[in-house]
Length: 357
Ligand code: NAD
Ligand code: IPM
Ligand code: MN
Image (cartoon, rainbow, N blue to C red; front, side, top):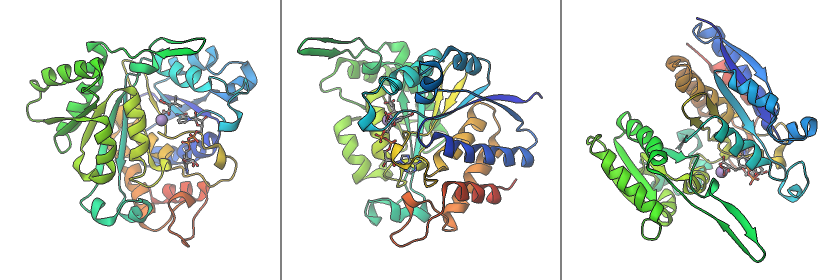
């Protein structure tokens, strides 16, 4: 078998630092699992691309991604107080939404769980999480208000939310299948008491449920879901929802593991898939060697699983991250008060050391 081509787009902020650790882990994985053989093509995206090419998503980067088997993405975007600078203006729309559109990435998968060793990092009371928390949020990624018409006319502005049955089916199909391989529970989150798009989601979900009768399906309004994620997180198995609700709920769910630095994600579509942490470029941590690289490392596991079918290698990376956390090696974001923490690179080294086949 030939080597898999991975486009590596570190991006801005902590992107470079955490990507370095993910590549270290992948290199060790290749030594242990001969079926995992990769080559890397690095490319610029976001503010880093703007500095060189004057655009956030250069044609050269698009071409490198298009010629690859998978895209490993860091994060992009600048500090909130610098958003007005041309380097950062619309960087997220151009780069992230641009990538999603260019590669038809309609299904975003964001797992969230409580790591037993990190239960202190979750702000939730012990009895709320002691039942075990392990969910996956499936977020539609190419529709809704993100991709509707945006316009401003003097003192009025609008953002239009549109969905088609075809768009809704894609994440739901993934979500039903995911539920079947898990605890067989699917919660579709919407605002069907108000929105027509939500009523369409319900119609499609109910129709599809006939094909997946073994899955227990229920519906929840998004405001209630935001509360239940905090109040009864063990309730959830698979959540499927539209683009913006999924964006917000996945950040809310990141308090369960205790940090955005523990939330990987996979964006799946009809061609090449993209893997990126759910969080952002954390400009507050840039250059300090303190960011948690776990999300980026766990992205490589998702890549091995979904793009390359290398299931044992993927599981080995996840097990190694678990083992490192269990052994009390943690970055600052998830350390107990007074507990010593390790640097970004030391955490990566520890995962490399813990990897076993
Ligand atoms: P953020 O996710 O970058 O940071 C939110 C908080 O989480 C910060 O306190 C940060 O320090 C912490 N955090 C995030 N990742 C971490 C990690 N790996 N380890 C430890 N702590 C971590 O969100 P923000 O501050 O709202 O946005 C910063 C920039 O990132 C903005 O420009 C935003 O648009 C962009 N952004 C990009 C993406 C992406 O590239 N996919 C996603 C979200 C936000
Ligand atoms: C995410 C991010 C992006 C989104 C932003 C930066 C455009 O928050 O990937 O969750 O809203 O999708
Ligand atoms: Mn987000």
